[in-house]
Image (cartoon, rainbow, N blue to C red; front, top):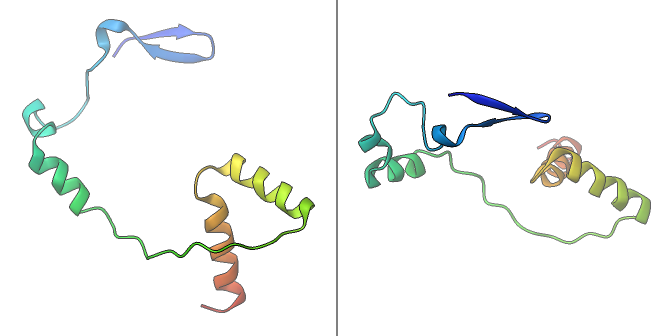
Length: 89
């Protein structure tokens, strides 16, 4: 795929749009069975339960900063892993 330098990012050329590098044929990439297989074979997550807690304002601010820095799910993972260690689970 050809890349064009646009500032700090490399973007594909318009004529390269839609090209996919894969060992599968185009027909295999777009079959219902292949989509279902990818969903069915995905690892199952443990069930989660939403709870609410109160934090000090300064702690909440840093906690939100942590979440923005590390992305979706990072705050839950941090608390979950911390509590597992604290409760020896």
